[in-house]
Amino acid sequence: MRVLHCTDFHANDRWFRWLIGESRKYDLTCLSGDLLDLNAYRSTEGQLERVMVHLQAIETPLAICSGNHDSVAGGDARFQHAQWLQELRRENLWIDGDSFELNGVRFRCLAWQGTLPKAAQDEVWIIHSPPDRTPTGIARGGAGFGDSMFGELCRAGMGPRIAVSGHVHEPQAWRAKVGRTWSLNPLGPENNGAERPSYIVIDLEAGVAVLNRAAGANDSIKLS
Image (tube, rainbow, N blue to C red):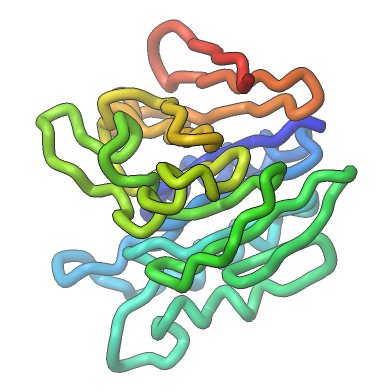
């Protein structure tokens, strides 16, 4: 089973158009948050509608979790707690709070700042923020943006087998093992302004993850 992991598109139409075609090559596509770019400095007018059209054009199995840029308090109820994701529901599409099995593998979509459940040892989590105090959750400048509760869970040996995340732009590393959990985050400096995003392909049968950089050499890791 081959899984495509992308994250933090921030309403980048070019990247979504790339994803529509690229997703056809995989058994499952995982988007780990910040599909939108909701903030005080960028207009939200038309943004949600464009992203919805892109996501609805993806016909293959798709798992999505919300990120901090996917919801905003007050105003439009669709933006509160990323309620707009509910409008995407179709067969073989999973969002915040969903747990599902595909090809014998258990997956779980975690909402931004939601309650963390008890993880099964062989689960794959789609969660926006990586564990804290890890190279995937610490930026190159040294600032930490990882999730502390998730970090505690992983360090206690109770995290999932694999967690695909984003949130931390330019992390110190794209992969790290915390307890029994492999944390994967494809974001890098080459993402800014690139024709396509950096992304990770996970071959669950072979137990291998490959980082496909938007620019530069690829890298791989054995998930043992």
